[in-house]
Image (tube, rainbow, N blue to C red):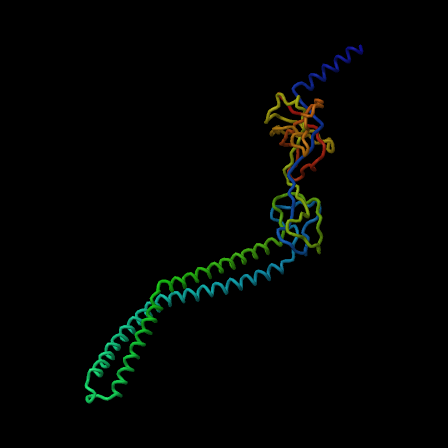
Length: 333
């Protein structure tokens, strides 16, 4: 009779487990988003508490924005001043385009006039020198000589002014280059204004996605650095990571149905499916992978993580806590 009971029990166990693979080395898993401010400053208000559900875009906490508003006003003032300088310099370019050619024409005309006067004064001087002494006076000769020398000096001055006025395009180009430099300064000032606007926006730290606030480590009055982690968000997507033995993977495929039992909630009857099988054992991706080339080798059955997605039996707004133990059973057939 005992043998019959044992045989019957063994047959029942074999029939009930045939085509199924279970493991108790499985845990709930999910995405954890670390929350950190993008700007430094003092926390002036908290909008959430631990384990509170938040929607994407909801404020989590606020950093004192006064320093960023002051920086914004300074940057805006610099931008306004730079734009005014650009406008003034553009006006200067337009004036230069008109004045420099006119100055060149005036310099050329003055040179022509000076040359004509020089020719006249030279003729007067030559005539006075050619006259007999009784037909002129020494004073007239000296006067014409002085006028002649003065005319020569005027020609030299006119030639110098013409040389100064000749690089018209170069002068205009310099004015245009100054406009470009001022435009660059204006762009830098504009970037500072935009950065200040971003800092003001970032002073209110918001949830990047839906989830539950966990591990809150910030209070009003705390001074935070940019990038300092102060809390985490557990997203609404929860799945199961089951570590199956390598000898149990034969016949397991993505898409196969899975029944999931939860140790903490025995009344839950969850359904899911195999989503994917990791391309490597858990030990291969550990911080210190096993080294089997030392000569001392003991064969150990490796375990491979399998991701199982929960399809039914669980409320979307009440996901399972992460890291709790589960027992998934994969239906191979």
